[in-house]
Image 1 (cartoon, rainbow, N blue to C red):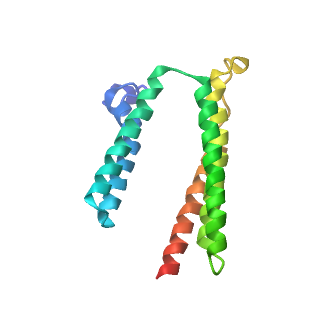
Image 2 (tube, one colour):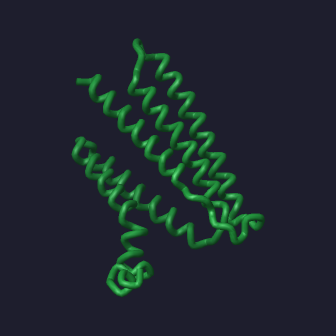
Length: 168
């Protein structure tokens, strides 16, 4: 670590922080815009989602500077659960309208379930340092959360792959 901190990639240096904070979020938005362009989306759609995505990213990063506000987590968690219930209702109606079994839809639903479970455990790990009862205690390893996220992405990927296979 001492050697690393003497390079331009020092953990507290500008290059590492720029990469750590902006690397994946900006790359994901650029990939999103590129995918819209490649798929033939209208220019207005690309601009709308591109600007909206960058504004949402900027807002989410700036809000971190206002400090810890516990009610925001309760409100956000409630919204996540409501959105999940909404997805379940829409998925059920979509699934019932299909003439035959749709493994693609089932795989996507499994992905959503794993993402919800991962969000639950992420909240527990991220919230631990802010609870007085656990002051000074380090949270346990988030390995189980990583497994849940990987499973969520895997099932969404498989669902999209299966849907593509059925179309061709």
